[in-house]
Amino acid sequence: MKTIFTFVIIFMFGLSSFASNADLFKLDYNAVQEEFSELNAIVEIIKANPETTYSSLAVTNAGLVESANLLPDAAMPLANAEHVLGIPPFWWGCVFGVVGVGIVYFLTDQNSGEAKKALWGCAVSTIAGGAFYFFVFAAAAASSGG
Amino acid sequence: MIRLLIIAITLLSVYTGNSQDYFRIKTDFMIKGKASSGEQQLTVGKIYYDKNIKKIVFDISFPEKEIWIQKDTNLYKIVNGLVTDKQKTPSIVDFTIYNLALNGSLSDFGLKKTNFKIIDIEKEGNSIYTTWEPPKELKELYGNVIIQNTDQKLTGIIFKNKDDIVVGRQFFKKYINIKGLAFPTEIIRETTINDKKIYEITTFSNIVVNEFTSDDKYDFKIPRHK
Image (cartoon, rainbow over the protein chains, first blue to last red):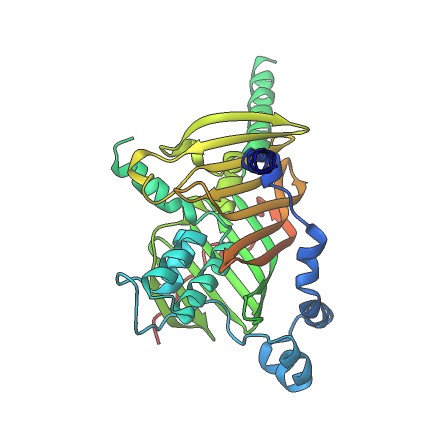
């Protein structure tokens, strides 16, 4: 019985270990959209009145801003007292993408505030097109004489 | 007659050349972000990029009206016509989605021009999955990158760490064709922190390619510091 159980475990482990590349790209699109359902109410207000700013919204729809837990700033925290390796967390996120967030997270003794700033750096890299991550690769490629 | 023929051929070659030479892109954008703590962020505005000028101009309208300009190794924040902040950055313009798209390098995310090497190509369904291995100098930090192409368009990227664990995914969806240039109108980024998945969605709309007007927007003059 024990042997059969061991074989079953090994078999199941084998199945999970050999997930195809296509499996890695599976995404629950509707669930992702659902994450932002609260924010969509604000999006509708902005679409109806493109002049809307956070300041004006906080006056006219304070309850909505509060319930959505909406941050007032665009993703650009420029002044940081403590930097990892002398680089502000914002840019770790921006340049290194998700890997940068991880580096900030671990090197700052899991200081969630720093990691959060790096995360917003990721948001800006999204603004800039999502390819910041590869600056590092390109720079390394160039320096290696490739 | 010969002269007319030469003129006609010249005009035709110029026209054909222009149809494939993309140099400018303008788009409205909206980014929704949500942190694991529940805090949300919404950024709305327009982006202007000219690959010959190499400035990315973010004309942001929400949360507040401000302009960000990425130029060389600087990111400027401009409010009410004054530079209120300036940050040193790596020179990243060449590696943005706008530059990659205009230069026809988006399908491989620009990897072809780096020292990453293809180690595996797999076809499943309508998609092709290409696994890129980092150069040895980077193997201590990064793992493989897998790119998903569907109908020759970039539709997804997976970043792995050196232990072969997926650390991030990006999905490029809802492509539209503007003057022959394919551009995604939705990008979903998934980040995993503390075993929690965090999502950001960027949407693009009103995309214009090769606009001949609004030079001042594409080459926005950076004012003096406050």
